[in-house]
Image (cartoon, rainbow, N blue to C red; front, top):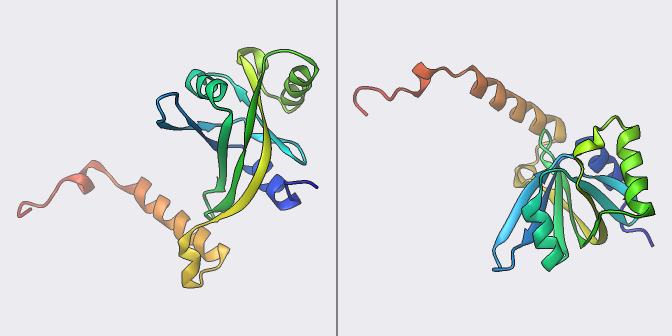
Length: 163
């Protein structure tokens, strides 16, 4: 039975950015954004190790991981729990590299591939939906917030005299 639904696959492929959580040998959490997260098959996600020494070191010591992929515009996505396997050679390594290359990625800096066997998946949904907002309304609010934030100037950051 496949773990990844078609909607999960669609979201991961559309977003490509995933936040990968690992645990250090000291028991400390580590979350790192990976811009190469994609679907490999019905049960696996993959990402390329381009500049991820801490993530790789953590996975070597403890392969348990979680990956969150969220569409920031609608503030919905998925949480994937699984076990990572680091590939540095072999048929599967070369197949994944070829996949990235076919998508137009520059694979010259890839140090390893991380193949994640997904063992569980669940939705991530912002609490803003509890108010009854639709996806379109959430996207509009988020877009407006970013528009206003980017329009601020240094003058907007100066506190008033009576502060």
